Amino acid sequence: MAVFSRTESLNGRKLPFERVALLLQGGGALGSYQAGVYEALHEGKIEPDWVAGISIGAINSAIIAGNAPAQRIEKLRAFWDQVSSAPDYGVADYWLALWQGDLARSWANRLTAARTMTAGAPGFFATRMPPPMLLPTGAEGATSFYDTAGLKATLERLVDFDRINAPGAMRFSVGAVNIRTGNFEYFDNSTHSIRAAHIMASGALPPGFPAVEIDGEFYWDGGVVSNTPLDWILSNLPLLDTLAFQVDLWSARGHVPRNLGQVAERLKEIQYSSRTRASTDHFRELQSARSLVQALLDKLPDDLKLSTEAAELCRLADPSVHNIVQLIYKSPPHELESKDYNFSRAAMESHWAQGYADAARTLAQPQVFERPHDSNGVQTFDFCGVR
Image 1 (cartoon, rainbow, N blue to C red):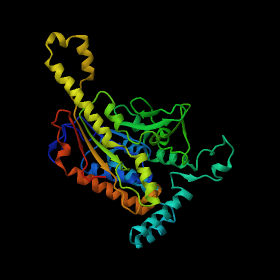
Image 2: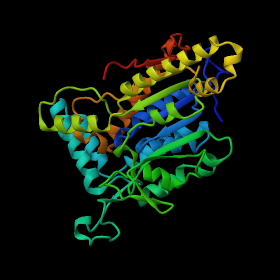
Image 3: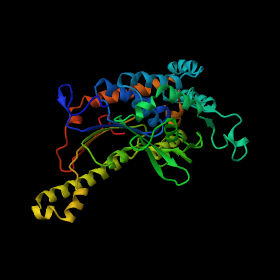
Image 4: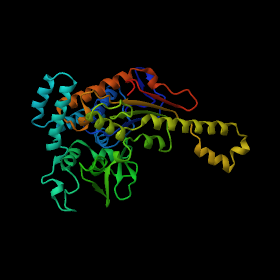
């Protein structure tokens, strides 16, 4: 299914990788940043072999995996245009364009975000009436503020699930949390028949959205436990030479807050950030140990290579190499804590444009496409600045 592989080239250069992975974090309205990143990848003739996501990243992943490459940008645009098309957003965006300064724009963003809180987002979620507090325990709608029936219809319109589940299709994974067990689980088209419910489960963030039932179990948003599929990709055997684009919507690093709005924003960033650097540091150490095991095995005499102990060590050895390219959304000062539920058209366009620009800047760096030469076989890149 992949359009771009190690036998093809980008600007005349062959890529020494067996897999291209696209990893999409959760972050609500910020998800249009990921759509912009994908648009730049598509224009660079880089199509992933494996796409994995959490929450809004699961929705973007489904649209990418569930359409032919030539249709993906169009379908991503259709989704983001729809969810940012509330009637009074046009008026709000008009005034937002006129207001200057971070303080004024902060209040403008809060106003448009408040519109989302009270009325929802078209084709995504709608406010429950009566609200859950007025419903008896166990009643339908008693556990969430919004109804997500509109999302099911949107996914079924924009995503070809037969394509996702077809033999030889792009690898596809989304993460969710089993409410009963508390365990994090991945729904993967190598082991599951993917349908709209799996995508909705990955994005069922409580108490905003209701739990989703799949095969008798109920699930919440994967971001409750882990907001990135990076570990899933890096631990899935067999490991292959991989070029991974990790697209994060929350930054693990930030500044000490100076007002309540910044406190709320920073709390979300810490809670939902992927801790990508910690994960990649751990993976680098693990790969270094695996390469040392491989080097030791290569030095064994032939008779010892046939031993049971050597066979067990072979399972731990791994010569694969990995380039992990980090694209982390950089939030302007005026967005504050409402940025993940501000579905205004102006905010959506801004996020999309920044994702495209960050990815285009990153793809212009030749070292992204060069095979690692150090002993651990892992390189990480972030060309969009320290977040």
